[in-house]
Image 1 (spheres, rainbow, N blue to C red):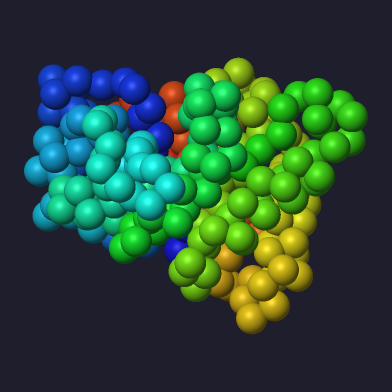
Image 2: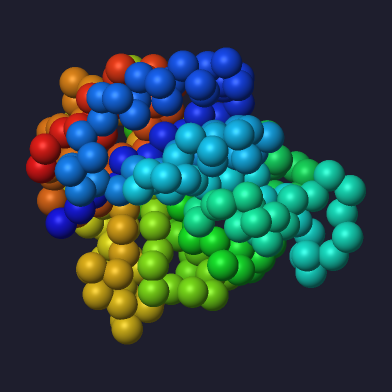
Length: 249
Ligand code: PGA
C-alpha cells in the first residue's frame, strides 16, 4: 500500500529557500514512486509553495486553522475555505507545539473548534505523550483522551489521519523502538475501531512523527500499522527529504 510522507516545516523557510529546495527536489525525486507526499509549509507561504507543486502529484496542507466556536468573525482568523482556496487539501490539528502554545488560551476547546470546522479539508490530527507520561506508563491513557477529542468532534470519519508524535521524540533525535511504534499504532487503530465500529483498519491511517530522518525512515515505513511519517527538521533539507520520498517500499 502507498505510504504518506509528510513534511512539517513549522515556522521555517523563506521564498529563497523554497525556490532552491524545489530546484533540487523536482530534479531528484522519483516520480514513479507511489508514496503520497504532503507539504505543510508556513501558512503565509502556502500560495508561493503551491506554484512549485501544482503540476506535481504532491499535496499541500495548512498548519493553523484559527477559528472560534461557531466559525464566526475573528480578527486574525483563517478559515478552512481560505486554505482550500489556496490549494490545500489538509490541515494539521493538535500538534504538541500548538497545544502547548495555546493551552490556557482555549485549552481543549480550541482543538474541538478546529475539528468541527475543517469542512472540506482532511485533518492530520497529532497526538502524543510527554516523557513523564511514558515513564509513568500512562501513554495509552493520554492517547485515549486525545483521541476522544477527535472522535467527539470530527464529522467525516471515513478518512482519519492521525500522527502519533511522542513529544519527547520531537526534534530530540530520540525515538521509540520500532516495536514500540508499531504497538502504539495498533493501539490507536484498535481504540478508534472500538469507538467507531463501522470503521475498518484500512479507514484509519496513522503516521509516525518525531526525529524521522533518511536513515531511520525506511525501517519505520515498513512497520506493521504504520501508514507514513510526519517529518519535521529533516524535511527542511531538500537532499534529506528527497531521500525519504524516494524510499522504495
Ligand atoms: P522532528 O519534528 O521531525 O523535527 O522531530 C516532527 C514534528 O514536530 O512534526
